[in-house]
Image 1: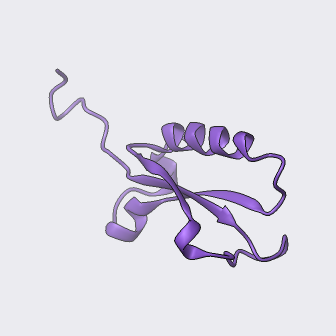
Image 2: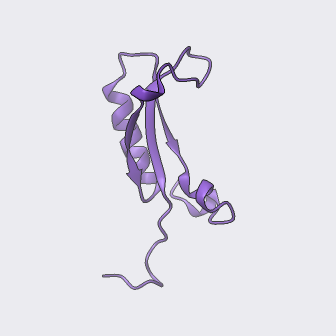
Image 3: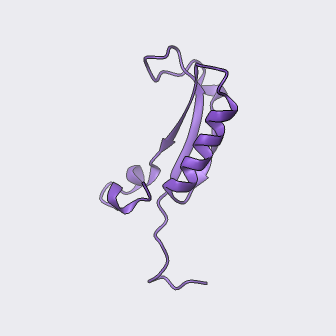
Length: 86
């Protein structure tokens, strides 16, 4: 088990998706039908989940998935994008 000094800080990311009203906006058709893919401790894992979900729904042009940088909402003064894996 790594010690706290060497452990990488968790940066919470959420992956969500749903059908959008049209291809030019990010307004979802039905918020109750949103697909909450999951919560991930870093951008790299969230991106992998986003990519997988996006590929599963590639035949539906209105289905869009997003990575939400939840750690920025929880701690706005926390790590910057330079601290993340992307």
